[in-house]
Image 1 (cartoon, rainbow, N blue to C red):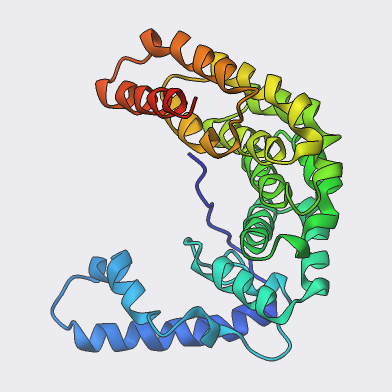
Image 2: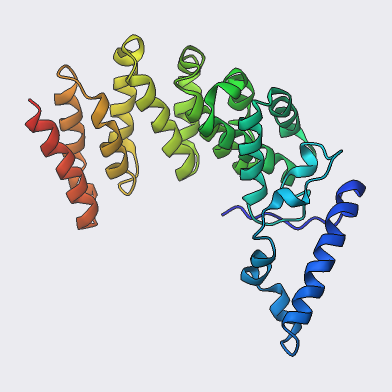
Length: 272
């Protein structure tokens, strides 16, 4: 599991802005919790309470998009990145998106990770804002940084319907990366296939790839894939989906997961 590393150095502007705020809040905590051990000030729930008014209060005029990232604010949670994504979408801030894409190649891995997080969060809210960067996301599928790989696949999943022609042209790489990548990477690769299969112009070519994933996917993921593909099943391909799912039932050890797949099969058979 990826964890955000601590960073010793911060941009001078960010240090100047955040440390006085943190210092004040810690002093308030010490006053409010006098008699308690100093370790209590490291309690994440306590610290979260002092940030309850929102990370945006740490933003000041003159701060760049990079200054507003979680790692630049010395935060180990993703709240600043998600709030930044919301701000970018609300303002339709194309320049901010461009800056984030450029910094996917930043020498600081924390900055890279924050940037891809903000970008796919933007994509979830407004796919069109990041759709033109499909090529950059595709390049990250070759990265040695797994956080960038599954983050990039997440972004591609978000824009599959906003830029289907480009994504369709990347399917070979997407499927290959999904099969050798993490569970999250594979989940989003299958999500891309399902989205493209919903479009008539790509359905005939994508359905065989999707059925192939059903045959080879980890048994634990199969119920979710089966449930998600139901809306794109047609009279023409229904039998192939039923056959593929039925062939995997013995591979599913957990009864609850097997029942989920059996329900999908029954639903598809009732549609005949």
